[in-house]
Picture (spheres, rainbow over the protein chains, first blue to last red):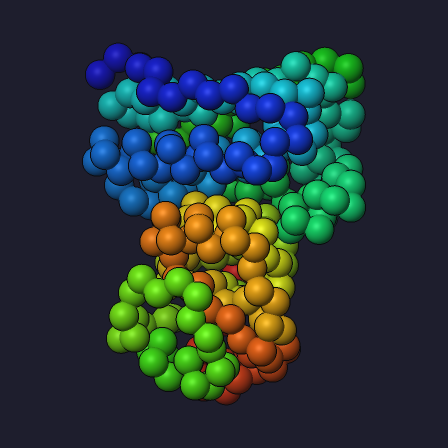
Amino acid sequence: MQEKLILQNKIAKGDFARGGETSSNLKELLRKLGIQSDKNRRVTIVTYELEMNIIIHSHGGEIQVYISSEKIRVVAADTGPGIEDLEKAFQPGYSTADDEVRDMGFGAGMGLNNIKHYSDELEIETGPGQETKIVATVYL
Amino acid sequence: MKLADIIPLLQLEPLVVIDDLDFEVETACGCDLMSDVLAFSQEKTLLLTGLTNPQVVRTAEMTDIKFIIFVRGKRPQEETIELAREKGINLYLSPKPMFECCGLLYQGGLSSEKIRRI
């Protein structure tokens, strides 16, 4: 099966009220497509972390999800401001989130680690003052 | 441990009831950090938390957790209850603090989750 775009959603900066809607829609969509529940779980956890990262850290962005017979690819792209220090961002417990975000249970410094753990492949393009693009792949 | 045994143990008040009392819980996670829940949790896990915002339900949804207990008698926001109804997630309220809830469940036979290395 050729790779097909199955979901495309804009994510607004600071939109906590709708945080998780995209991932929730994706979970339902993958269920309807008959994707195995453990694969579905991995893809939706990755997408949820990416979605919350856009809401918490970026100026806004978009999530696209592609599917083929061998894999699901989640592409999260935002309009900046970029990840200052990517190595630090991968250290468990390191976070630049503010108190409001922490009060909601996020900003624990586990997001990127979770994304890496649940993905089979992970590509990140970012830098200070740049847009960030993250592509997470889960093989079926 | 069956939910039927957990209800009197933690003096649970039901807020959203979807599954029946025969539901078998295998392990529990006491946590206020949602990314930690996303990192460690598995199905048939009971989530105990002091957070009451809708993201708690979202986190449960993504990890296939079916039961959330709000500890210390902290009543969740109406949006949280609505979302749980919509997503089919059971919500209960315990007047007991987190430490006591976890201790009672452990004593009652629930074991820890298998924690992955970070």
